[in-house]
Image (cartoon, rainbow over the protein chains, first blue to last red):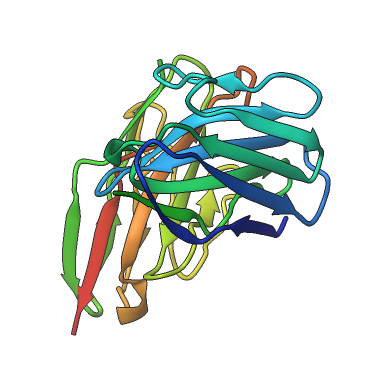
Length: 113
Length: 110
């Protein structure tokens, strides 16, 4: 299956600032996804990152708050903008391959103070 | 809209006892279902998917379309099975979006 490197693994940020999370895959994949896992809750899909086009956001998530880049088939970034304590969460990237299904990064644990 | 329900937040069993983690889904199309596991301090990883019909680490799950269920079972629990288990459904109508249940924490006691 694909191997995903995600960084940073954790960060503590001041409210009002932005954090960019990077996701690197060891092979070319068409579909990359970004998820959020709030404390004590399940994973919620933020958006699908498509190479060469705008990301597709799920209900409740907007581009201004979570801008995504997908410059090539092995890399994507998610930015959490103008952060507030409510954004404290684990953010995960994921890729889909037909043979192995979904593979997940190790996650970025974000704390906003 | 697709939905995955895992009714139990926590399931505690003794070592050697059978395990059943419940998962029900709602989806208008033909679902593809998965079980993911997250061990302490490790990343989320695929345990099994219904289309492969495999048995991984002694776990099996059968898709029951009549009951819209995909329960995860193991005949004899082991201490190393203690983890968080998530049932997930992939939409097959385009987009390959994965919807997760809320997860069940399995605790295997000695």
